[in-house]
Image (cartoon, rainbow, N blue to C red; front, side):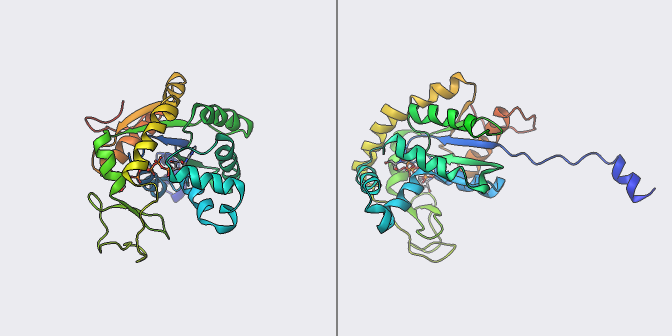
Length: 254
Ligand code: AP5
């Protein structure tokens, strides 16, 4: 049998699953950033964290001294949301980057109903190949506070650690690049309470928006990292109508 005919008779290779544009929703500290980093490694699509983009503005002296930069800094440090128009513009600019063509993971956006409505309209306007799908990660509030106050981040590679649940090998130092780990200015108990208030008042109303559109699933975030990732993967396949042998964990996808 020639090589040629053998290749013709072989079953076609299954195309790897790519989820397209997706978003992770959830209260402060549920693990959106942590799971987004795992999904980036799995799918090779970028993470777009509006929190990270805003912190980059805040930490850049030239940008932080503009009226938008100064406003963003003061609101973020108090745990309040920055204005929709500013965040929408930042996201619109980021979505023009070529690395978003195969999909992307929005982390922390949208977090108001107005942002969700803007995003749907914007994706139609830019001819997005697929609408956005949303996965909410759920964790109880007492656990969230421990996650927030224990969080440490590498200022160079943004890798996320937790001194209680996911510590670095050497205390206070990033495993990947030996940089000293930092604690975020808004990771205090006081700012956390404000962020939770903002979440309840402004972000929870986003959920019915995606539920009504049939583009929403919830996963349990109070489980080992790998279990949460597996459940998110199952939820994404389900939402994109991909048949698979994916079996979510017992408390997994809803
Ligand atoms: P942002 O940076 O988006 O903060 P957030 O939404 O409060 O989310 P966090 O980053 O705190 O939590 P996370 O869910 O990513 O948790 P992580 O994975 O790190 O926003 C900051 C501010 O920017 C806002 O307050 C606002 O001012 C502004 N902003 C941003 N976007 C905006 C928007 N769209 N509109 C207006 N304003 C906006 O995990 C937390 C910890 O838990 C880590 O230590 C991690 O190691 C640990 N952990 C994670 N998973 C697990 C697990 N399964 N088990 C045990 N520990 C775990």
